[in-house]
Amino acid sequence: MKNLVFFLLFLGLVLLSCSDGVNSPNNPDDPNDDVFNLENCNCQPPIDDDNYIPVDCYDWGKRAWSGDDQNGDYHAIQGWFQAVTLDPNVAPNNDWVIEIKYAVLVSRDRATQKDTIVALLNYNGSSRSLNTNEGGLFSRWYQDNSFSAMKNSLIDNGVLKIYPGSFPDRVSHWWMHSSGKYRREANKDYRIICRVRITGNIALQIAADYYKEVSSNYPDNKEAWHSSWIGQTNGKFVTYYFPNL
Image (cartoon, rainbow, N blue to C red):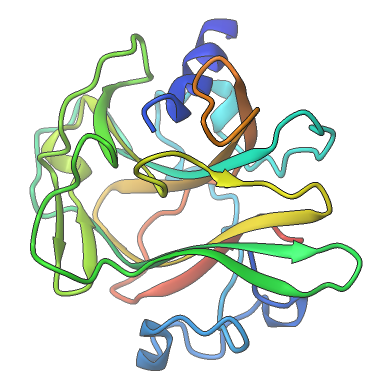
């Protein structure tokens, strides 16, 4: 178990928030949500569902963990995601896909309850795959520090597409800041919001790491929190957030 946690913490090496009153979306497939609006976001937290836990998942990662905030020595944060097939032994399937229209890191001031966008990724621009500063294909589950390029990723027409079924024996792992981390303020809490559609026998997890400084790498980091596993969204884009502040 210690080894699994050790390698989970490595995730950050290679490198929130709707108001509390909008936990349930009015219309999760509303096209108006395709452009992120911090003041009016129809979003919901992921729900624990045993059907979406990968069969070989390490114990620490099976359930949502909202973390703790007793980490005053950690002054930076990095948002990240991981996606896998539910079963590592299935035949490759290039039709199973995670589609993300945006990913947002949001801070909330504890005193004023004011929300601020720290980073917004909207995946506009030329068509391309994620580069190795943005993500990689890792072994299940991070058995060593090596990774390969995410050949199963595609940014196209404002959508990031990840195809975990193309490499069932790998973890598709990517992060928000391609050249460092975001500064973490001690008087603020953080969450990630993302708009996603998931198709196939695959699952997505939303998470973050704390780092000692924005320039730090492993081992000067620790996990901040991770969501439950998110599975198929029945053909619709849904906006999720985690954690619940």
